[in-house]
Image (cartoon, rainbow, N blue to C red; front, side):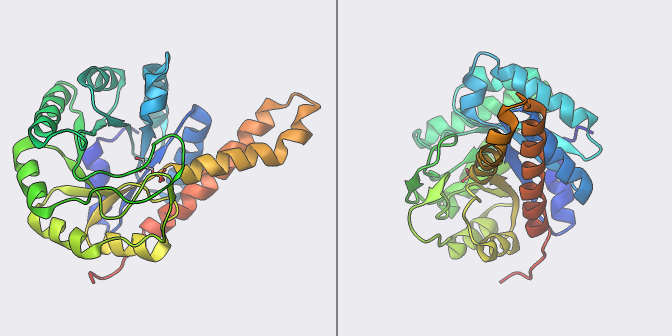
Length: 283
Ligand code: 13P
C-alpha cells in the first residue's frame, strides 16, 4: 500500500532500523524491490532517477511505480531523486510522488534555501515531502565512475537550513559518493554525529553501493534513517541479463530475462534490507 515518505522513515526509525530507497528504471526492477520488501515485512522507497524522469515517458514511469506501490502488500513510497528545477518537482507530485529530492547543493546558499522552500510549498497540495542536500555528494546518479568525495555537510548550516526550509529529510555528504568509490570509503562519523546533534531532521545516506557493511551499520547507529542504493542494482541487472542472454536468444524469451532481473533485484534488496535492520548501539 502507498505510504507517505515520513511514514516509511518514521516506521523504520521506531523499529531501530533505516528505510531502504532503491532506484528503479522499470517496473521489473520495482517488482523485485517490492517482492523483497513484502518478504521482509518492511516499508520501502522506490526512487526514480533524474535521467529517467527527463525521458519522454519519465513522469509515466513514476506513475507506474506509484501504481505498483499502491498495490503492494508492503508500505511503499515513490520519490523523484535529485532534481533542481521546480517544473520537475511539480510534475513528480502530479504523477504520484510521495517525495522529491531537491538538490540545490551546487547553488549559492540562499538559492538552495529558496528552491527547497518552493518545493516544500508545491508538495503541500498533494501531501508530498521534500528531501534536500547540503555539501555536495559527488558522482553521477545514472552512470557510475570512480570518484572522490565532494564538499562535506556543515553541521551548523544543516541546523539553519532545516529551520528555514521545512524539508523532511537531509542528505548528508560525509565522504559518500554516487557510483564507485575511487578511494577506500571512509565516512566521517564525527561530522555525522555533529549534524545529528545540530538538527532533529531525518538524515539520509546516499551512495550506499560499495560501502562496507560496517560503515553502513555505524551510519545507522549515528542516526541515519534512509539509505539510497542504485549502482549495485544496476550491476545486478546487467549481470542477470548477461548471464542468461545467450540461452534466451533462441526462443526470443524476454519473459525469462525479466524474471531473472526481478529475482536478482529482489536478492540484492533483501540483503540490503537485512543490513539496514541490524541494530547497533550508538558509538
Ligand atoms: P549509488 O548509485 O552509489 O548506490 O547511490 C545511489 C543514490 O544515492 C541515489 O540517490
